[in-house]
Image (cartoon, rainbow, N blue to C red):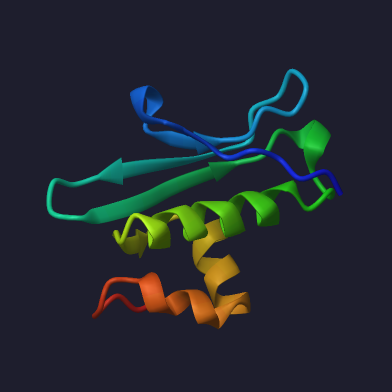
Length: 98
């Protein structure tokens, strides 16, 4: 699988990959007190089944950890990814259960 570059598109409040003419993305809301809410993940149908969503989730979580933000995973895809990879619970805000 190709290794895609993660782009934090601050103007659109989303992390994204550029894959040909497609833009898989994770939308977010950042607060001024160090919290980030991941609200929606979208992988175009033409790209499904290639592991792009998982790679996107992994890179987004790594970036959030690097920036020392507290994560609130509202998006079902991201929450499911963390359930499958429980090591990432370390960056989920305390008291958040999903």
